[in-house]
Image (cartoon, rainbow, N blue to C red):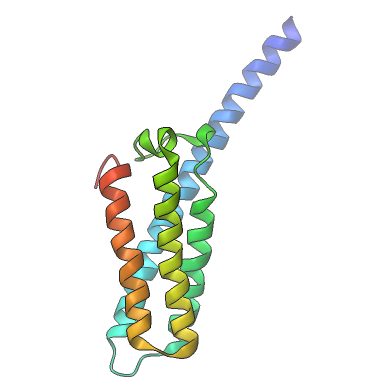
Length: 140
């Protein structure tokens, strides 16, 4: 009985740490996306777009999007997300995929050096972000 009590005392804080870490990782990924998004937008606004820079930034956006897609486990509730993320995950997952599609379109456009396609991809991702925040974030 004593060993079970000790094991539970150790396990509960460890699961709390894991959930807190997951929330922190999500928040860090979202912050990085916001920062990278601004950098891409700024670069696309330049007369002479540095496509190599846009490509690197878009690669990072795709990577962060993939991290986020897989970081909303039911056991990792918390942060600024509403309960609807976990109680109605289908639409949330669809919005995450749409955001990633926008980043992938941006990434492809950077390889093709197609400014209008890059802007469409970025706009698509941004519109999805706004829609998702309205529905699934407790605080804007």
